[in-house]
Structure formats: C-alpha cells, structure tokens
Amino acid sequence: MNTLTKLREAICLYGRSLFERGLTNGASGNISVRTPDGGLLVTPTGVSLGALDPAELSLFDTNGALLEGSPPTKEMPLHEAFYETRGAKAGAVVHLHSTHSVALSMLPEVDPDNALPPLTAYSIMRLGKVVLLPYYRPGDPEMGQAVRRLAGRRSAVLLANHGPVVAARELEAAVYAIEELEETARLTLLLRGANPRLLTPSQIRDVVDHFDVEWD
Image: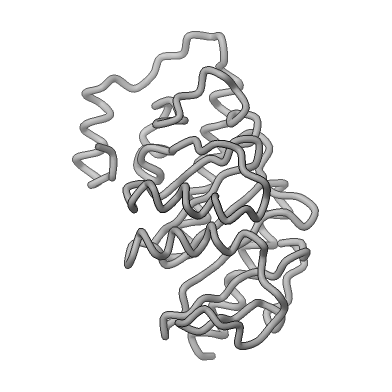
C-alpha cells in the first residue's frame, strides 16, 4: 500500500471516528493532509465525515489544481492559510463544528488571544494558545486572511459561532489536538461560575518550557 493510499484511508478512518463520537454532525467539518509530493488531499464538500469514500477525496497538486476526486470543502482558504503560514509544522488541518467549542466561542468573557483557560497541562501541550477569531460567513476567504495575520504563530484557532481549526505535523496529532480543544471547552462550560483552580503561571511556564510549546 503506497503512502497516498494510506493517507486516504487515514482521513476516512479519523473522519468516521470524529463523526460517530458526535464531534461533528451532518456534512459539517473538513480534513486535509499534505501529500508526499507537496500537494493536498482534502475532504469533499457536502459529504459527512462519517461517510467518506477514499476514492472521492479531493487531490490537489502543488500549484493548487484539482487532479481528481470531488469538489473540495468550501473552507479551502482556511486550510491553505495554515499550510502557507505554518510551513513544515502543518502536515494536516482539521476543522470541526464540535458543540462545546462552538458554545465557548459565543461567550462574551472569552479572551480572544487565549480562548481556553489553563485547566490542564494537556490542553497547553497539544494546543498552545488558542486564538478566537471573529465570525465569518462559512467559506469566506477572509477567514484565511485572518489566519495569515497570525503569521504562523498559532496552531489552533476558534472561529466565533462556527468551530475550532487545528493544524499539526501529522493527521493523528491534529485529531488528538482538536479533541483536546473540545474537551477543554466542555470542562470550561462545566466549571463556569465555579471559580475553578487553574494552573498557575509558573506551572504553565513549566509545561511550556518542558514540552517546547508555542506560547509567547
């Protein structure tokens, strides 16, 4: 089995897993992966992540031309912006409409520069600081421009009233990270108004330094 075939199957496997666990619904959410030759393999538009066909995934060459498969997700500008600005640090991008993350994005007290409170070491390790971006119409190219303005400094963003987007070196890492984002959002909502004990600045710095997290 060649690498491209493995990537196709991995996208479908993780997509189905995310869908079946309720982390995205209907035909929402999208996944992309960098191919060995520098192109992109992307989930199609209007297709549930729970029912992906490896043969129908959208395959792009290094110039952005569609080589085969169905038309891609309308969120392509969002994915492309992460690949352009993150370079070798972005080998895969996952975007979901996961419930708790979307709910968190609507709360007025959320810090746009650091949307997740420091509840656990794992959210810091996997995500660094998560930026809350303003609302944009789905598919609006301005979402990509908003990511570009971050200049590659962040691997995860939360789109207001829309959902999370995470980039990582590999698909598995991106999936694990976006799951961590959703779980931390859920914890944040559960603890809202309860005055929880957060990680201290020194504890955060210890995690950041030990695991070489992008934070400052």
